Length: 95
Image (tube, rainbow, N blue to C red; front, side, top):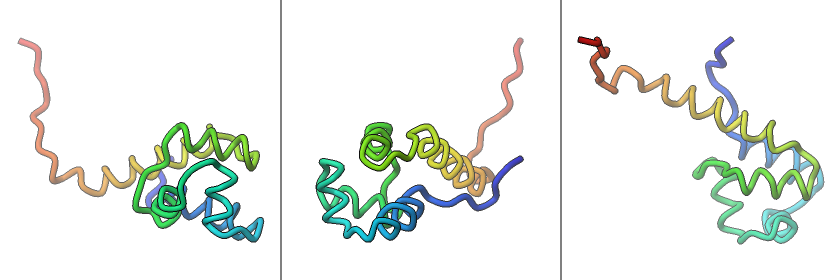
């Protein structure tokens, strides 16, 4: 079943980890071993979740990286589906 408007993983990280543990972005970035701007751009939906960041979150907070990567993939698919009509490719036909 296709999700029409899946959540960006940054929003999940903000609500479930930052708010859930009452952490600032600075505190969480320190726990993850990343810079504050790196985490901030992710949490605010301005960057994509990388595999490495997903693994850092799993190690620090116990959220499975598989879950986080699936969230990013679902978000990416929905975003691309919304602009599919602007991508023009002819169907391949074998000769």
